[in-house]
Length: 287
Ligand code: SAM
Image (cartoon, rainbow, N blue to C red; front, side, top):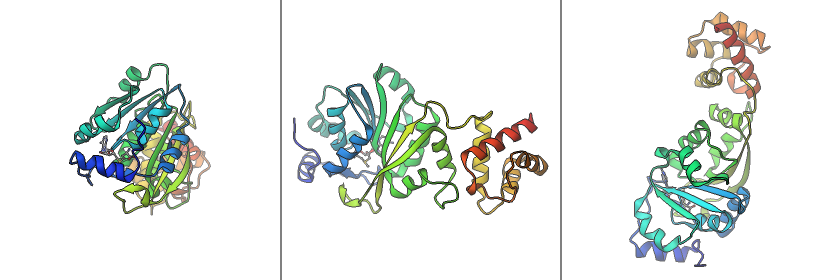
């Protein structure tokens, strides 16, 4: 079954046949550009040893290409009105589709059951209304995956890939950088989707590290500190941390001095290493 699903005419014809209506609230913007789809698959570096978890297959244009390159694909789609469509568009022996909300799926269990012995990668053109929660779920639940390749809103990709001191830099940047090296593979214009979203997009890859980028005594404390120091951007680190974490100013001051960090600096100018140091110094004092 070799028809190219990304042809807009094929897509329109099949979707009309099943009376499918695009849902804006589910973030349904389907890819109609073969070059972009191939570029996503290339970035994922798939071979006969790969297992792919796809989030939101939609019409199946990307899924079709993934099935041709990987050993096995498991796709999670929340919209049950696509079931009939998939019977026509996605006839692959190495594909399993789960009709459920990705946020509710036990992904660690899924990976263990479906991808034994395979090198697992997550590949998706993400629904934009839920991009951040999906990425945070993936990072926090610590799946055994080597790579994540996702299409997101351009601004989100830039934030995840940003450096200390830039205006996009935030707590989520650090959550990502702790576990992965990131790279923006391509910036994508809105013309490659049906229907067209208002914003431009980008494909970002996360190469998951074998161990977190830095060693820290208390991971949770470090992320609390990171959140606290970005919570009140206008405040100095000293005030931000003591207010938000309810730690005495003196303690914070001593910890910053011991880490050789200027208490007047703002959190958005610090990198992961420095947050690690502060966290270790604070935990030493609080112990
Ligand atoms: N992969 C297709 C493509 O590239 O053409 C569709 C991408 S579209 C941007 C996002 C897809 O995610 C839609 O099919 C939508 O129904 C699905 N989706 C939205 N929310 C979801 C959720 N919570 N869990 C799983 N799939 C979801």
